[in-house]
Image (cartoon, rainbow, N blue to C red; front, side, top):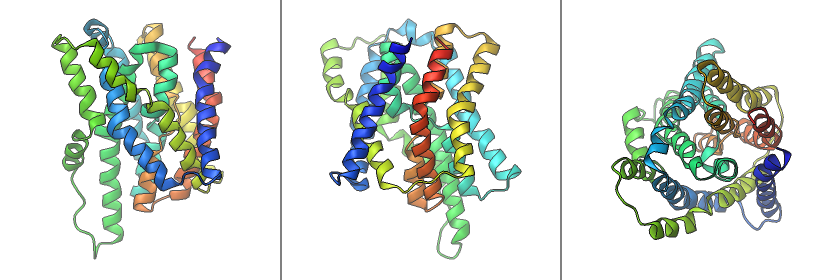
Amino acid sequence: MLDTIVAALLPIVITLMLGFAAGWHHDFDAKQASVLNRMVMLYALPLSLFAGMVGTPRDQILAQGPLALAILLGMAGGYLVAFLVMRYLLRQEIGTAALRALAIAGPAVPFVGVPVLGQLFGAVSAIPIAVAGLVMNLIQVPATLMLLSASTASRNAATQGQPASVMSHITHALREPVVWAPLLALVIVLLDFPFPASLRDSLQLLGRSTGGVALFASGIVLWSRSVSLSAPVGLLVLLRNIVMPAAVLGYAMLVGLPPDTLRESVVTMAIPAASIIVILAVQYQVAEQEMASTLFFSTLLSVLTMGAFIWLTR
């Protein structure tokens, strides 16, 4: 078991450290890291998800409904609960509440999930990665963008127009390759349409770069942002790294999910916070240092917390 945990997590640590060192050595800066992330989101990750999905038998995909539901409840349900608590119980500003909810309920599955879940679960890992990516891009990010837009408009009522609607953000998300590529692959598999293995393998050539490039870019971003540990940051990291996967573990045990499904769903939700929280914080100038610090400490501690959940669900 220790060998499995090390094999899954050591590549993350080394690649993040290489990115961090590249930032420290001034070989790359945050702007160049955003270019690397853009390549991942527009090309490498969509190709990886598409090729992984079309290579998965239809019966295997249809059997993953309970896993998809667990991830959906963990991410979408967790986001809703976190936002309502932050906004209406703790009386936080709407933009800050939205970003904190995304930090709590939005694991970096498209980036960290590729090397970790791929190492642990093989080709079937394309399913939780695709589901988590769809939930983030169709629900969490559009909702956060709408709330941040509303926050900006309320702060600058004299110069800002009406914030964009939820539907406009969803429509925009549907145009992104990371959203429509796995959906297209799902349709192909469900229709039992033959897809050439040689073409699938060709798409994987760039797709396999997803995890390494994304983690390297994340290391650069972590170097470029000043971080500090505060009570809010510590609480966000605790909720992201421990409480959320523990909640999904409790749900999985309550409904009696099969051991393999339980393990996949829990480890998926144990992945650290996504870099999108820093991107949106900088774009809207809301809680920038807090989000950068949350990303840093969540990623740093995930080696221990993910290892613990991998061991618990062995």
